Length: 118
Image (cartoon, rainbow, N blue to C red; front, side, top):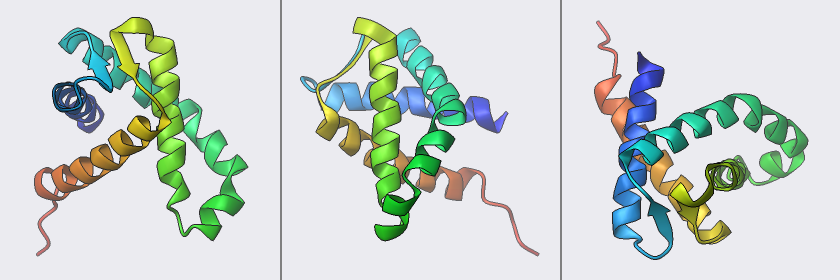
């Protein structure tokens, strides 16, 4: 359930970013946003661990900030695999999108999925 909610949240984020960054970030519709979000989650399961392992020295040297670059690479892979329905203008836009997605997902996880401590 949490995974499906994450896909929906990312799809809404994709739509919001497409509206805000009109020329740099394009999503053809909500179905394309859901498809891109689903594809991104699959890439995060299959490709992201391999990228993290291969770039471990850079990740350690940057105290984990290189993970944003890895997330941007997976977002660019999603862009390549989705075709014209989901377009990101460049790596800089993908990096900005991953920072925004990370911050929003962190806030949502802290508010919605916050476990009450007794």
